[in-house]
Amino acid sequence: MAEISGLRDQALRAQAEAENARRRAQRDVENAHRFGLEKFCGELLPVVDSLEKAVEVARALEGAGAMADGVELSLRMFLGVLAKAGVEQIDPVGAPFDPQRHEAMAMVPNPNAEPNSVLDVLQRGYMLNGRLVRAAKVVVSKAPG
Picture (spheres, rainbow, N blue to C red):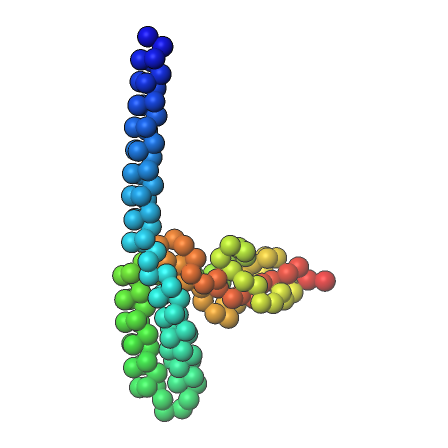
């Protein structure tokens, strides 16, 4: 009787272990589908940065409005494609500083802002399906004095 109980226990443990292995494999496949583009996405972000800088510079130049509009349209299309792939921008101006999503480049005293809030974004951050690809580089307020 004890031998039957022991064998039954072994069978149940083996079945549970097989089920756990199946779930782990399924989760790994799902993560591979969700985050397989992470490296590729990270390599495309400097292109987005360049397009954003081109729009900024073209807007500052006299007579380059049409060029700025064209580059901005290309940038919007590119960001739309990234959004379809699950990439979202982090643009945290005014939000509290979050070291998990932001990289503080400077701290500036500002009596009009909450301490430890984001005053300016030097470089936008990006997330892929909820996972950080690149932290936003930000300027953070500190208490005056």
